[in-house]
Image (tube, rainbow, N blue to C red; front, side, top):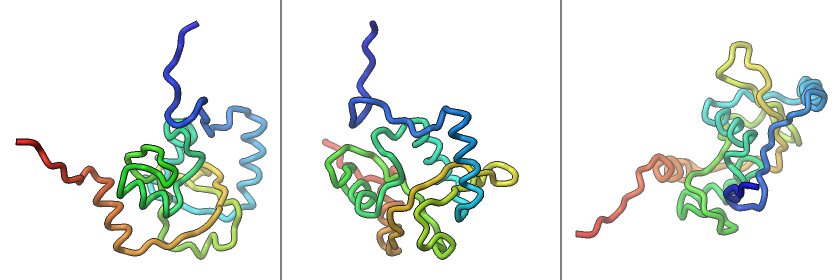
Length: 148
């Protein structure tokens, strides 16, 4: 039996994609009654990557504390190496305030179908300074000192 490389940060791959047609149909039905959020292309891409297990061991978007830690140190608050924050940034949270689950709508497909269902643990406000720092640090604008 061939040995595979162990997934980053865990013993097994935890892809979030729902393979069962019956379970997906159940979730699609549930999504009809949930608050809906049209996400940006970046958040949609992150949802696809989370679903595929590419962001293992993450089980969802990062909270503000982890996002800032990753942007500053390339490590989560738990010490896991991570190069960029995985976030779902929205301008107006009033549509989902108080919701425990929301349907994320795909901005890249006509009709904006449901892309995923997200469990909402909290809605956190980032300052403009925090957002600028995360964007600057996450865009590859790290400053490296070279040896001469």
